[in-house]
Amino acid sequence: MTKRRDILKGLMTLPLLGVASGETLASSTVSKDYDRDYFKELGVRTFINAAGTYTALTASLPHPEVIKAINYSALQFVKLEELQDRVGERLAELLKCEGVMVTSGAFSAITLGTAGVITGGDPEKADRIPTDMTGIKTEVIRQKSHRVGYDHAIRNAGVKIIEVETRKELEAAISEKTAMLWFLNYANPDGKIKDVEFVEIGKKYKIPTMNDCAADVPPAENLWKYIQMGFDLVCFSGGKGLRGPQSAGLLLGRKDLIQAARKNAPPNGSTVGRGMKVNKEEILGMLVAIEVYLSRDHKADWTLWEYQTKMIADAATSVAGVTPEFHVPAIANHVPSLRLRWDAKKIKITPDEARDALRKGHPSIETMGGSESIDITTWQMIPGEERTVAKRIKEILQQASVS
Ligand SMILES: *Cc1c(COP(=O)(O)O)cnc(C)c1O
Image 1 (spheres, rainbow, N blue to C red):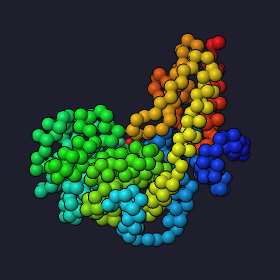
Image 2 (image 1 turned 60 degrees about the horizontal axis):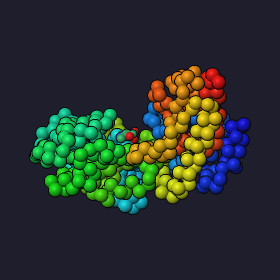
Image 3 (image 1 turned 90 degrees about the vertical axis):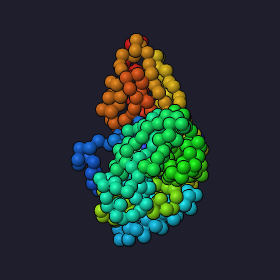
Image 4 (image 1 turned 135 degrees about the horizontal axis):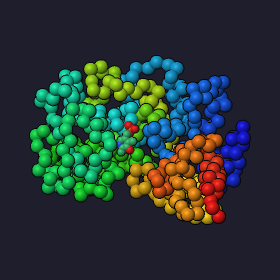
């Protein structure tokens, strides 16, 4: 009860930031609408997410409109293919591209997109991959600097990854075995071949290009920027900045390739993607998440995140010896972010210990960072929670303060 009051108080003192509608507030009070506290019964602790969109922390809270769509769809039957068709058409309009399919995440968008490219949607080939690649292209080329922990998403389709560094190496690596050229959007600054040139090479050799943009909204324009740049396929996570279901994602791009990808996914049984099921709840939830995301006041969101970040920094730096660093990651997780460091001589607690104290407190608070700092973002917080986070951080640092 106090929690709700605190949140309301927090909202009241905020300048007009477009959150006054209470839309974000709803998710914080949702537990009051239930007569069972399921997580408590299980002994599973909930927490304030001051970390960001991490899979292990269940990523993001769907917008209340998304939850409404999920609940609506849970209570009635539809045909899965028909729903994918209609939602795909609507999403293609909204995202200004030829085709869209809802997947179970960016990871499965990569696998299904790759499977679509190499099988062309032929059910006989879809049945054979990833083990019998007879008559199927088997190589995907990507830049070494674009290596990420998600290689398996590509390899699951049965292909090998060929690493190159320069345009010359890339062109030399292209052969009749080359199925696709793969790009990791946030690594664009690190690679020798930039996005526009990469697309141009794909077009020159008539090889499909795929861009993994999983965590790359905001800004919203990224939802169409890379398709318009000429990438044939683009992948997004549904449960990160888009605040759709965490078990959803989007594959967008050329209509023929989207159709081919779908032949490798449920309800088609003997396919590599059969286990990557999305049901009506995620499919409809994803559509509504995009509708809501596109209609948001993104500038107001940004102002709120900056305000919250500053408030936490102000509280922390009221303890002598604390230094804040404000930064915004250039591409993925492009939001106002805070790094707190402190003078170990003045404050006798390590960042790891402080992070642990935040986690074990009431309420529990999850943050990021290594042995040098506590790293915080506020974009996955419920407005008002920044006050609790600010207060707890200040308390912990103050208690450890020698002065
Ligand atoms: C999160 C992420 C993925 C996986 O996305 P899911 O939606 O969790 O499947 C893939 N690539 C990158 C770059 C990511 O950040």
